[in-house]
Image (cartoon, rainbow, N blue to C red):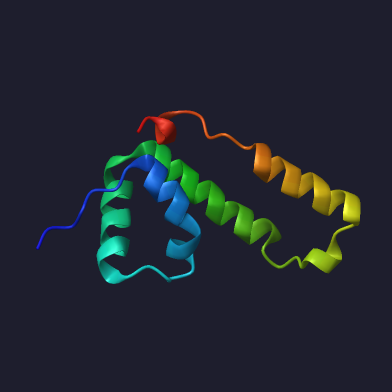
Length: 87
């Protein structure tokens, strides 16, 4: 059985599950195979890891309501650019 190929868009949708170890083995293998050939997605996952390392210990109660709203708004408006949106 071959591992299905993932697109950059699919990888972006799966990144949190991947980092949480929640992907099934076949999908995790496809994720890792894509990372081996896609520098844009490699950067994306590394940035995600860096963000988790920098702020992963924060709880929502640690942020003011204004900061919480600004973070949520930023994620809602985020549109990836570069190689990871090519497909």
